[in-house]
Amino acid sequence: MRWRKDISYAGWGRALTATGRVARPVTAHEIDTAAPAFGNRRSYGDAPLNDGGAALDMTAQDRITAFDRKTGLITVEAGVTLGTLARILPPQGWVPPVMPGTGFATVGGAVAMDVHGKNHHRSGSFCQHVTALTLLQNGEMRRITPNRDKRLWAATCGGLGQTGVITQVTLQLKPCPGEVMVVTERRVEGWAEHIAHLDASDATYCVGWIDATATGDRLGRGILEEAEIGRGLPPARPRRRSVPLDAPAWALSGPIVRAFNSLYYHRVPASGRTVVRAFEDFFFPLDKIHDWNRLYGKRGFHQFQCVVPLDQAEALRTMLAEIAESGLASPLAVLKRMGDGRAGYLSFPMQGYTLAVDFPNRDAAHDLVARLEDRTVAAGGRIYLAKDALATGPRVKAMYPEHPDWAAQVAKADPDETLSTDMVRRLGLRRT
Ligand SMILES: Cc1cc2nc3c(=O)[nH]c(=O)nc-3n(C[C@H](O)[C@H](O)[C@H](O)COP(=O)(O)OP(=O)(O)OC[C@H]3O[C@@H](n4cnc5c(N)ncnc54)[C@H](O)[C@@H]3O)c2cc1C
Image (cartoon, rainbow, N blue to C red; front, side, top):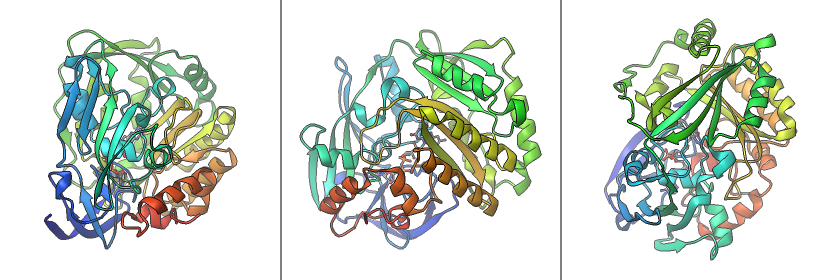
């Protein structure tokens, strides 16, 4: 295996970086050194980083090794992206059962974070559809299943890659009745209406964009999107664009974000509308702007994402009010109702409401995120480790009561801590 030395790399938020040896093996059998793996580093913080050490870039392992068109059971290498599957499978009558908001997420990364999609309330989390995994553990390939290897399975799904390098994933796909998304968009004028619509929706896919700069009576206003897969010809896709340079600090300043959000809100007519979209445009709307993370400038950004139980919607409203008052929020903010589906000890989802908001990487944002985390703990909720770069170990352990079960399995699977990452060390996750 060929190593490249002194490579600097980062998560999607670019606020934290690492420098070390990186290898990009083309097959799993080439891997001759135990090291943590990463996919396309679409996690925002330090989950995919190993500063000063070695790391395996899994993106060259992108083959489909088995596919049964009749049953929809597919086996893929860990570096296959969900965007690739979402593009090639619908014409064959199948679709990945769960897709996060970026098609660049690899299947290995989707397992290690047990990702959720806009259909979480209906379909649960990604790993609930995985029927078998191959792990490279201490130099040996080991195929595991949820029934035979219950504890190891629960420590692997959403387990941050700490039980072994995931090399292959077998996934039960979902039947796909068409090739377009039929999306109904409507404006919601404030917090109570937003929550009421999320509660009442019976759509398969449902998500709210929220204007995190709106205050007073408009607090919580946004656009609710409800969607179903439909038949028809996909509309022509707009050309992919890219952000060629790091943007200056004012690009996402308070007044600009407020103006953008107002335009975005009013783009949907007051009476609502139904539109037909291509799959990628609905599931991965930001992927068409390459390197959009550069809009936050050189210092990068953070995303705060939490989920709180259904009876704690008021706590979430208070958090949103604090975010709106801070003047720090970016246009990217999402509100969603989740079901209770989750597959692992450290899986993020719980039945409740999840809020995700981006902030530029500034001291004031760090203080705000710390306060939001405290409120999340107090509300009995949790933050999503795929987005985190700032939390502390005690807070995270308080949010994930099954953490000791995870740590016990990880200690067995990787006793020498060869798979430890910057996030695992920062949060002290190997210790109980
Ligand atoms: C625009 C955007 C939208 C997003 N929307 C959502 C969303 O709606 N829902 C959601 O759940 N998430 C969402 N995410 C987060 C993203 O889905 C997860 O962070 C996912 O893990 C990224 O996949 P990746 O392949 O880039 O993994 P990486 O970020 O590279 O790695 C993630 C973790 O998985 C481990 N890992 C990766 N590959 C392997 C492997 N082969 N073996 C062992 N461990 C491995 C890494 O060590 C790390 O701990 C979003 C991210 C972005 C940038």
